[in-house]
Length: 328
Ligand SMILES: [Fe+2]
Image (cartoon, rainbow, N blue to C red; front, side, top):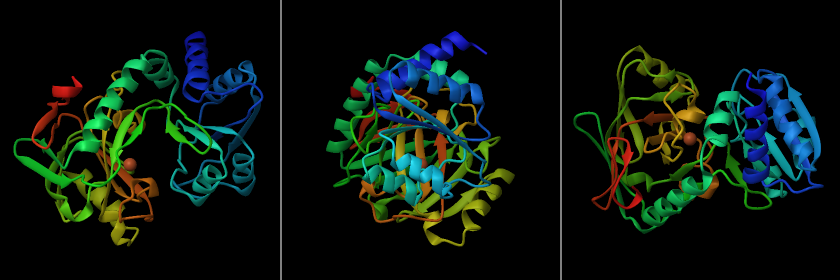
């Protein structure tokens, strides 16, 4: 354990990212699978910063997005700030939405590890990351069409017109805000019926797979995934989406572009989907702030392509997984 590096990075996360002010009621929340020293590092930082600090740990659930225990939900609602370290994340639950509507702000670090806190928070200049994210947001806001090339010949196109780009820069701005630790990501819900073509996913797919041992080739027609090709993991992933018996699990809910220069492909989706220049597709449940037409579904899964070429209205944004053009 690198306790001093962890202490410094956790302090940066709680002060600069969560923006804890002295006297605020802060809840450090985890499920039982999370290492307690990681929970302690955040609690110690919150306490050192003058927060009215509480810690709650509950038994790990078998699946993501199960409503948390009632006492946990009540504690979240009663807090100004939740530092959420839960592994089996609850991001798409009723509780999450309700406590945010009540003014609780949440810094969500689901799946985060000691190494990630030190490397992707402590070791990254957030000013640079946020500035690039803002440039990317402006470009996405002005764009009509997004085109992404992957593999040798796969092309996926979609219209972004009229939909808001959501920059999760990793910083909490005020009551009810939600952001993620570590940052950052730019996400958007494309206009569903305009999403057509193919994408080769060469990074990871979670849940339930994680790191892919061979690429998946996905085919979309009018926002719905109609074909999945690949090795045994393709069948595993497709089977997981279909076992909910929910047509919305086959709908594209959002696309994202990662922004963290310290992120590396490792099979942990929290890190993988933040790789600078990666392209992410989220399937299933769609947060309401995307203003899309998919809405809540039974669950959610993200897939990551790590070496895409991305174009906005024909202009290069990313080449072979590296930022170029106006976001270089
Ligand atoms: Fe997602």
